[in-house]
Amino acid sequence: MTHDKKDTAAPLGAVGLLAALIGRGFGIFAALAILAVLILTAINVTGRYLFTAPLRGAEEMTGFLVVAMVMFGAAEAYRRGDHIRIDLLTERLGPTGARWVDILSHIAVAAFAVNLLRTGLHTVAFSRSFGAYSAGYLEIPMWIPQSALVIGGGLLLAMALLKLIETLLSIAYKDRRP
Image 1 (spheres, rainbow, N blue to C red):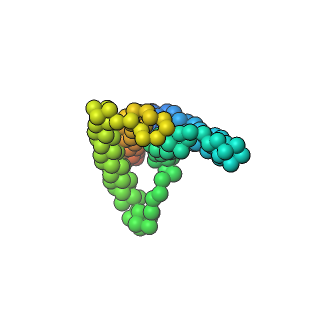
Image 2 (image 1 turned 90 degrees about the vertical axis):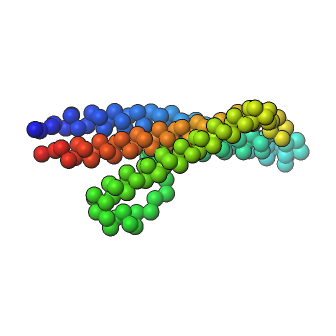
Image 3 (image 1 turned 45 degrees about the vertical axis):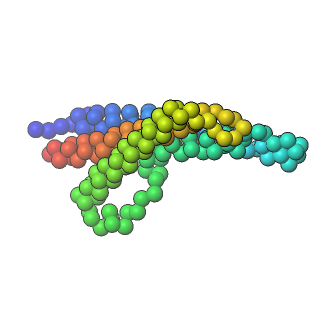
């Protein structure tokens, strides 16, 4: 039984496209958060040192935005392979061993993401039930910035599962080729 390239590329392409849409979409939010931090910091520094009138709540908002940019950007960095990975062992295992390391690493990332998602949900629920507000000038409900943990955990879990599926499909289709 032979398969042409269209048969093997379609499932891999669909999984990759879905991962790209999710990762890039939230990657744009992460990039916008970086831009917002830059603008807030510039306004705050200018106000503080030139006019002795800092922007109240800027440091607090910057902290919230940093958490959001990390949580929203982690899935895209993982999808693109921009995360830190030590390939010393993987290079010595050969192609089959490297595939197993990829599979195990995707499972490990998924397990981490499940834990991040679980603790994020718990933190948000606690803050909502307790009625916690930020201690700074903004005085916003803490569950709002803490929701970035839930979103980030969900995104990272989705990306790890998509990467795992993509890896397993590539192995399955490679083994089926004549």
